[in-house]
Amino acid sequence: MAPHQRVLLPFPLVFLLLLLLVVPPRADAWGKEGHIMVCKIAEKYLSEKAAAAVQALLPESAGGELSTVCPWADTVRWHYHWASPLHYVNTPQVCNFKYSRDCHNSRGQQGMCVVGAINNYTDQLYSYGQKTSYNLTESLMFLAHFVGDVHQPLHVGFEDDEGGNTITVHWYRRKANLHHVWDVSIIDTAIKDFYNKSMDTMVETLKMNLTDGWSDDITHWENCENKHATCANDYAIESIHYSCNYAYKDVEQGITLGDDYFFTRYPIVEKRLAQAGIRLALILNRIFDGDKADDIPLRVQ
Ligand SMILES: [Zn+2]
Image 1: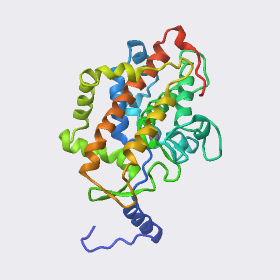
Image 2: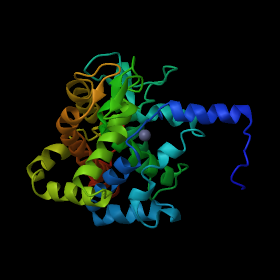
Image 3: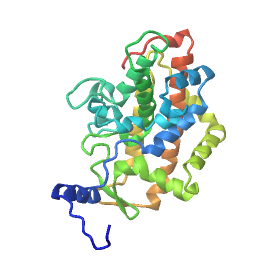
Image 4: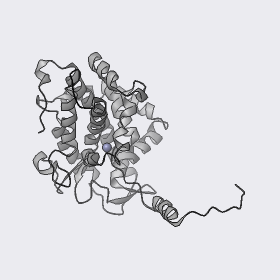
């Protein structure tokens, strides 16, 4: 193109481009990095049998790695419209979660939230090895994604602010919303400041913490008494507590969040990523390598 040649864009396109520049992206899940890290941790804790089943179900494009398909559910939100409410759950501005009160979509259909989705896809995967009409590859990809989502505190947030999506903040100098800060910004800043801009280094550090600093906690994280369903209900209860005590705490519209917020919140983000990885492995091990007592089909709580 000649240097002075001007390209005239049709008005709607100009408008769209301007809109993209001024409106911060609406985030709806751990960013890509968050989901990949959760699944990289989970892969390490899969039993041999579970790892083989996962391999058999993964699409060819995954190159044999579960982590490559973990962000997938976010990329199909627009043509799997029904799945949009399955990434989160909102409470009526209270710091507790109740399945019967909160787990529904905007039309009031019960079970259409992240907790119901985890139980549903787990239930579907129990038909692995039998004749089934489910697309178990998709069930696995949804499950791996939603176990990540339920651990992002603001995926169990308040209805009024859409889990922090409508709370505009500045993350250091950049305009963002509170939900995006927890999906992406805290992780990005940690990768940049602590891990030499390498996500892989961050994952390796989290894995090392799991065999070191957090090793005593893992048994507690894995504790899931519920033999008839996953413990996704408990993970949602944890998340709303983290939302109230950390994510929303001392935040108001227009606030600038910087070092004070980052240094007190990033340990929570790291812990939630590690917990999600451990629990995803736990669920997959129970499905594909469970003893008979664990083979009871799951029921939505
Ligand atoms: Zn999501």
